[in-house]
Length: 443
Image 1 (cartoon, rainbow, N blue to C red):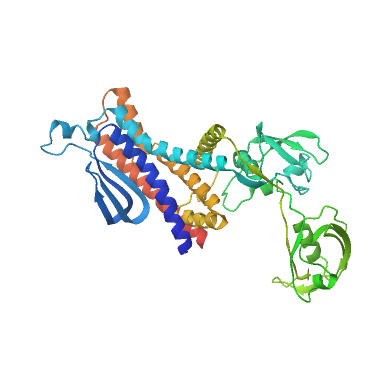
Image 2 (cartoon, rainbow, N blue to C red; image 1 turned 45 degrees about the horizontal axis):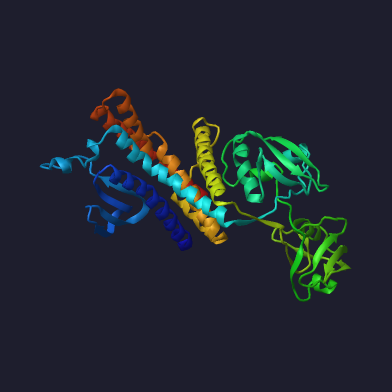
């Protein structure tokens, strides 16, 4: 719990500071006095005022932050000081100040994605496993060992790139064309028409449902327990299993299933040890599992090594690809929001701070690269959220500015105040709804 909370605070701090920094810099550019830059809400834990009169604050509740510009000229202010109030700026200047926050949110994502693509990531080579007979992948003719070369005309090198490219068509029920290279070296195009998705996406493996899965590696003996069936058969650490029973292309999952399904039955194995092939016979011992089912056990732990590739790009290509990925992610988020509004997806897909903390902790446990990538995803979400034209969000303020530019005068204070009340009420409802969803997930 504390681990998740720690990385949640880190995530929110980085995302919020960068977002609010956009507002701050834009305000300073147009000579607007910024009264406060706060990280967090509630009780002030630390404050420091700089030479520009801005109070930098760290507050107790780490659920966001804000920049507070001077709203109206103070009583008795000089002409120069009065001009530093945001209300005295043109509609265009205020539009830029409000837009700078979401822009910086997207900029942070581009920086993170660019850095990852420049430094390179190690990913499994996208070899596909044999799809189950009742899946879409099987229907369109995908076979075990097929290598994905491109998705919708875009070359892919690693498995993560395949998953990212298929995320939107899978979730929106669109179609996608894959360029595959078979085990014989021949290439072919496969078009998949994914079914429409309804309800909640929580815990749903859309790739798996479509029959698209990474081909499991060949099993390698990682550990042999004393007096187990594996030791009695002569298995040793480092043995590579080449064949098991009638399985010529054996995988870890296939081997484990074969062992579990054949208690007290002898299984012939072909293994490779020190560049030599050996044949051994192993008889799984019958044991009762947690479900009171008799299964086979041999007292051996298996591991496997996926064939991998280092995915790395040059500086300019990385920036371009990172920009495309950022705005593709933002557009995908908007599409999902639209589907929820239209009733095609469940509102249970909305997550709050509890879920974000959980995901932050999970990504950090996988590795710092995944945690940093998670921060990029959250900052895109923050950018998209703030562009929604709801009064009280940046997007709503930008709409007020656009209306003012068209009408050549601002909306009346009464209309703006009532709009803000409606907007804040809606935001409060969404926050409560997100908390309820989070609590439901926990329970």
